[in-house]
Image (cartoon, rainbow, N blue to C red; front, side):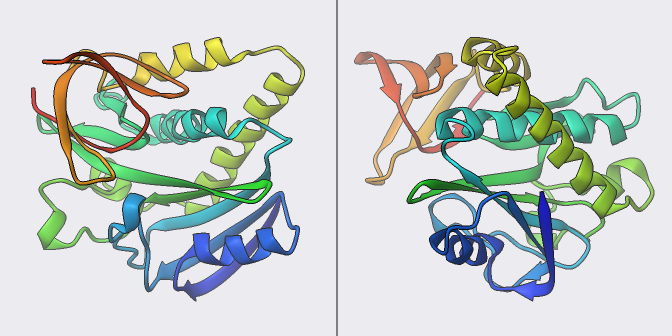
Length: 241
């Protein structure tokens, strides 16, 4: 994959969309900082220097976007796991749909957010990992950096290359039919912190729905609510207990 690096962008996803509209694919946009970094639903993503911020442009013919949506967090998690101290290696997981969380002193904190967006026949995978950046005081109760966990600075480009290599390996296995969507889902479910939990989900219309998570598949979350079993395709998920 071709990697294009910048000191600062407003958003790597915005730049990637521009290239996608010009027909580019297999390109990775990396920025040291983002002035207008965003997460899902336009939420602010603090992108201070020291973090790893990148967006990958993929042709939808390369891999089903629904699979990419669950494959991206798997690849980030499995890469980060290699860097974690032994006492943290089994304390990392995915909060629906694709936040990577690490347990620190008994509390799960977010270390990575992923935003996937469709752009014509391209899919943009935006990834923000707190690596060596200092976590701002206003979010230090809910976020953590890899440096804070490991007690040392991490080579960000090495981390990026490992994530991309793993993603390419997975996509190759899918194309060669060495791996199917059910096996990918099985891996995702193994890492899920959300399945079996009671959650509250904010929907796009600002309505909330609560219940117990029975399962997660390519089309969303399967939730047991007061009205019965519901399929929720997307939303902001809050773990209740």
